[in-house]
Image (cartoon, rainbow, N blue to C red):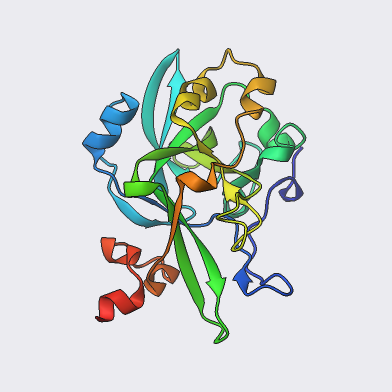
Amino acid sequence: MPTADDVERPVGSVRPGRETADLVCGRFTSSQRREAIGERFEVAVPETYRERYNLAPQQRTLIIRKRDDVPEAVMAKWGLLPHWAKDAKIAFKMINARAETLTEKPAYRGLLTRHRCLIPADGFYEWTLGSNGKKHPIHFHLPGHELFAFAGLWTSRTDEATGEILESCTIITTRPNALVAPVHDRMPVILPTEAEGIWLDPTISKEHVLSLLEPYPAELMVALPASTRVNSVRNDDSGLLLPDDALAA
């Protein structure tokens, strides 16, 4: 049976010699309107979806998957909760899955064929650590805050106490591109638009879909300082995308 050692662990230490907070992708934005997402991915987005500027682990996010060869959008908790897990807290350690070891880790290997999903987003945060010890968030996104999709995996299980179907997901990470590398040694996989359908297609071989899990081109991304209010999950508004000095002006 898989164990917690099979997962990629988010950590909060600072790498030696670098003033960066060593956090795997642990917050992201999905702030597009429900209608815009539905049009972009050609799905009916649940009415429970809401625009998010500071989406954190164990909160519900939108995923898009294929069921019976038809794309569908559902809400799922961010942090994979496998059917074999006895402790639900393991989901906090399974918000990310390393692309390089997907076929080796039992927690993910069985999901790679028919449990791939898209996770709509328009940016993600990473942190630098200042000389004063304060974490400063950087928001990575596409020009114009264009909507994109992370490559993800999903699973479901039945809550033994309530009988409820629990949907959960994880974001796949890869090595960083030149824009992210000064801040972090991992980045979430952003799929090119033309690769989204391939990623969702269960008839495509594992070898082919694994080849899609590459860093997004740095020249097609933007990195801007964000508000330190991002550091608290209680804050979730559009002002988080502006640095503190801009709000004070």
